[in-house]
Image 1 (cartoon, helix red, strand yellow):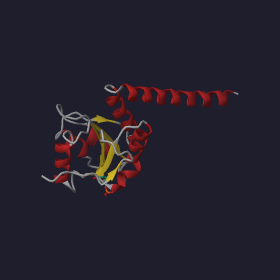
Image 2: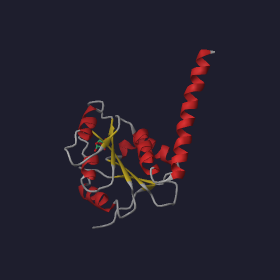
Image 3: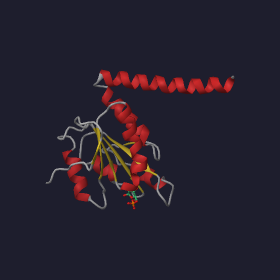
Image 4: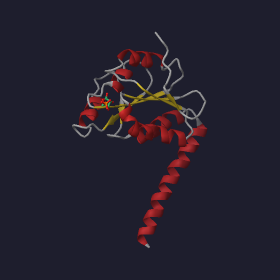
Length: 174
Ligand code: RP5
């Protein structure tokens, strides 16, 4: 089986720990929010297109090779009949976070239900429709369990977020 090489890489030249995959390049505007937060938290990632329906063999190779390539978490986004996260979860023991991408016909409800309603035994941690940012944060939280410096960056980011909200509240009250 040919090795899967990502078509787009994160800016960092380190070993990617998070694989961000999506069914189509039309998912990229949503999925790049996962990449953006991982970049802020300095988590190495890779980004590529893997379609459950249009490139099934590539999907099988990606899922089977992910662990040996050094990935620790996979974020998979898809819309409509969104089989990608569940199928990839069936091919690897790595944690898979599913991102339901808002679809043209059903506002993403189809994507959400396709991803969240996994049968017992094959878990996919599903975030909100277009919730790629939270998928990135969730992946970072998983990785931070074994990486104290990442946990410190995550803590710092969380405190910053809290401070921003408090400043907005203060501005409204004055
Ligand atoms: C899914 O079909 C993709 O994840 C995308 O959300 C949806 C539509 O794909 P395109 O027709 O835009 O390529 O496989």
